Image (cartoon, rainbow, N blue to C red):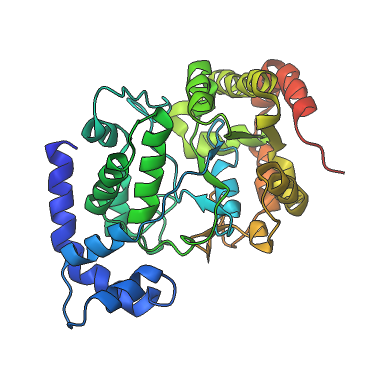
Amino acid sequence: MNSQHREKEKDIKQRLSERVISYFIGQYAKVRYKIWMLRKEDNESELNLQDFSRICSENVLPVTSPLALISQIQGSGGTLLSQLFDGHPELHVHPHELLIGHPEKHNWPRIDLSDGPEKWFEVLFEDIVSRYNREGYKMEKENKESFPFIFIPALQREIFLNYIDSVQSITLRDVFDAYMTSYFGAWLSNQNYYGPKKFVTAHTMRLATAKDNMESFFEIYPDGRLIFIVRDPNSWFPSAKKRWPGSYTDVGRAAGEWNKSAQAMLWNKEKYGGCVCIIKFEDLIRKTEAAMRFLAEFLGIEFDDILLTPTFNKFPVKANASFKVKDQGTLNSLLSTEKTLTEHEVDTIEKETSEIYSLVRRESVRFE
C-alpha cells in the first residue's frame, strides 16, 4: 500500500477507535459474533483498536466461494440486482460497485505472482471504503439517504497478509480469495457475515465488454458465473442521458456504446454457455419473483423472500434511478422513460440497435 493509503489508515484508526467500538456495542452486539468475542476477551471498560483488530483478525472466516459477476453498460439495473441479492443467507454480497479493476475499474486486474502480497493488496484495494466510513454508504453522492458502513482498511490489510501467509503454494485464485476474505472480514457492520456461502456476488459496469477481461475472470473463477441485464435502449437512453450527460448526450454515440455491451452478452454466452445468463431489465421489474427464482436456481441457492426487496446490508433502499424516486422497492415507472425521447432519438435508436437487441432478447431468459 502506498504512503497515501497508509496516511488514510492512520487517520481512520485515530478517528474511529472509540466510535467503532461504541457503535458496535450499541447497535450490532446481537448481530456480530465478533462483539461477543470482544467482550469475552476484554474485561476492562476501555478497549483499544489494536486489541479490537487482533480479535477480529483471529476470528475471520475464509471466503473462498466463486464470484458471480453482474456486468453490463451502466444504467441497466446492475445496482438493483445486487440489492435484490443483498441479505440472502447463502451469498456474500459486495456492498457497492466492485472496484478492484486496475489500472481502471473496467480492467480486470492483472496480478503478477512475482510481485508479492503488498503489491497485490495495493492493486486490489478499494479506497472508496474510506469515504463510506466518513459519510455512510450512499448510492449517489448527492443522496441524503445513507447507511452505516464500518470498515477498517488496516484490518483488511492485516487479514489479507495473514491469509497469504497461510497458503503454501500461491495461485491467482488464492490472491482473490485472500482479498474477498479480507474485505468481508474488515467490513464490520456487515449483517450477513456468518453461515455457509455459495457465491460472492458483485457488479461492475462494462467489465464484461472486453474479451480479455472475461478470459482472465474465468481462468481464476472456472466455477464463476456471469449475469447480464439487457435494458430496452428506448428506456435506457433517456435514463443514461440524464444521469451521465457527459457521456451519453449524443444519441448516436450512446447507441454505439449500448451495442458494444449487447454484443458482449452474445459472445460471452456463446463461449461460456451455462455459466452465463441474460435477464431482461423489464422482467427484473415486472416479473421480479420469476426472475429471482431463476437466478436462485442459476446460483444453486434456496429461494428466499429477501430476494424480492432491494436492500443494503438488509436495510430497505430506494431504487437507484436517474429520475425522481420517492418509494422503496422496484419500480415500474423505470420502464416508461422512453416517453421523453425526441422523434430523432427514437429513429436513431431503432436504426442502430434494433437488430442486435432482437438477437440478445432471443438469448435472454424467458418468463411466461
